[in-house]
Image (cartoon, rainbow, N blue to C red; front, side, top):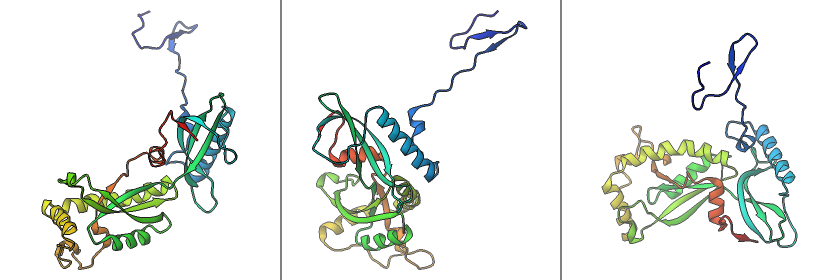
Length: 258
């Protein structure tokens, strides 16, 4: 019999003198028990219930109300809260804690996932209305926020830009809208040149709009203006949901939390 090569599985001998390789055992990871984007809504609900029952069997029962409990944050995981009025449930994160006496528990924090959309200055109202109409039933809430634009060439000057914050009931709705908006943002961003960028900054600093509303780049070939053409970028769309919640809520891992 030829010697076994490194990394090759052991062979099992048979009565006929022939040999066959022993089959490898299939390992099921814990993540396979969680819901994925490809599963149906019913399967997601069943996966969430299964994960909850596993957590309870491991000693992490959900703490909903009562006296204040203090523990070390040891883990976190995205989940969904069942709601008959919201297909797919409401988004949330399970935070797992260990108390000083060794007892364990988990707490579920509901938080709307979101991403930011950058638009041409002065077009925020039009894009906001367009998002509500185009993604009715998916976008839960729109809000205008001001943030420093770190992608500007002179971002050290502290130029602040008004961005649209699109919030959603769950991550599935966010992914559906992101899939539609991202190609628009990439296409419109390619149309903008350095002069357009500096002119927008100058408009904000001067207090008036240097763009001519009648210019051709604001219109389609058929002469109809589409608010989607004013979307020039999409921000914070790639932050994992549980990381987003931990950052916004100020909950770093391995921290003592109430």
